[in-house]
Length: 48
Image (cartoon, rainbow, N blue to C red):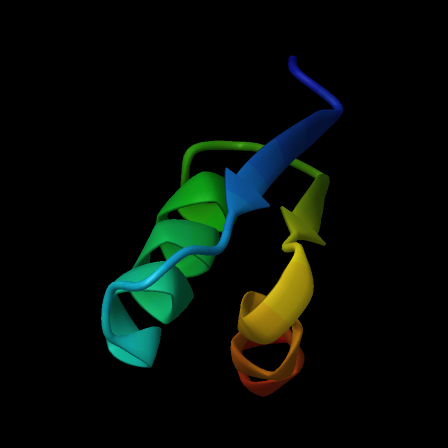
């Protein structure tokens, strides 16, 4: 089983990234890392 996954945050709507994180967890990932740079950091905090 895979232990961790990564979701990179960009300019898409926040709910797209929330769905990506939930999908990772449902796929068997035990840990999901949310990464963002610059202006997207606030969106990453919303997703987390």
